[in-house]
Length: 569
Ligand code: ATP
Ligand code: MG
Image (cartoon, rainbow, N blue to C red):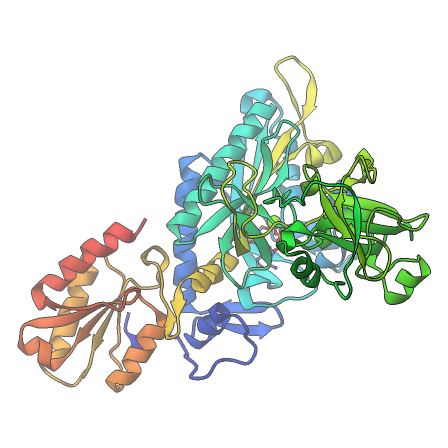
């Protein structure tokens, strides 16, 4: 492809609509454009990458006998009524009606459609399992479309649905998709963590989200480099490095001014983890609760909602109203009617430093069971896991990261088949609902996540496997009769060897070409300049490392073909 003919309108300045580096770069490099809020066009360069991502997905699906097909984007409202999701889905579902007032929805996902498709055809256990998938635009009227392709209203998804006769078969389909998803992440160049989203009764996972590691990610994660454990901080039950107090008789001490954890830890000369933080809230029923958590941990909003319903932290007025002393709350001598709860991470703690419910006083050497009682029902899981906590699987220290959900695998069981009457005749002659799994990859979100992970201050750094073009040939002066023939020859040799080549044939200054090449981020640049050519060489630049080497004109194509082939994945 010749750059002079390429439709890739670059921008000099950072577009105002973009916050994330990846969003800015895709716009600046002329790879996409916004039509309206949450609606994007993929321009030719981005589309080439999308196609490569899709080919990698196809390859992995082929390997596990999942079959590609296509259903209509427009879905019949009747199906959504049958599954109950016409009401449950809420305003995210984009609804419309036809000229006869029949209702439809633009598919945000296609469980209903696929269940409907197979319910009259997959009738016997002998036909199972079957996995079907498609790659297609999805529509969701997101409350806050943002970050470009990360959260848009129309986006490309690969969605697969498996149909099984037995739980073992569903498990197998699920494991195969999960493995394929890990491979896909790797092959498109994403560093991603498989995070357990749901655990089944027997301890195995029934849903996993693949999270691409990126500071810009919406999810806060902890993970273990040693054993591969990864979890959302909202879901992880934190095992902490418990710091216990000293043994002794209960003692009330004056701690003037020590109303914060920092001040108290200093006063007692212990680490913050050695103190117990008291957090006062009003639970969903309007009842006062004081929660005790390790001094160095925070209350987790999502977990707290699980434990206390739609709670809120107490205001100054509410603290007064319930007779609580800010900064000096403790389990001993709490006002009547105030419930005390304790984070499960403190179960092994024997000796506590806690507020005395009196301004300027704390207790030390307070012992649960002796000085205050904790009922089983008052242990709650409410803190946010953090870096340095203990891996619940292997005990190694956890690391923290943020993640972008790029894909998810899910065991649905009979959720849709039961409500929609998709049954089959089992071996034992009994009619049973199909067991389903669903497996989604956000293809457009994946594209942007790749850029989020692979860029520098100059632009994008495409992994070879998904690069729009693998090599960019840059003749520094297209009019020079020494330079142009060499560039043309190298480009043709590369093409002949099956390499995707872009040639910057524009009559631009070298500086402009270099900047654009770095911005667009093809993995290799072949710079054809007069000086090197006179020595029989061209300059080869590796975009990722910045490394430049002189290579003989006659050897560069073969060398690049080899490099590219090795990284195609
Ligand atoms: P999120 O929690 O980010 O809203 P989700 O869990 O609702 O996503 P799924 O229903 O699991 O999304 O869809 C499968 C995949 O589709 C997601 O893993 C994600 O990569 C992608 N995806 C979902 N919503 C969007 C969106 N609004 N824009 C772009 N991609 C999306
Ligand atoms: Mg999801």
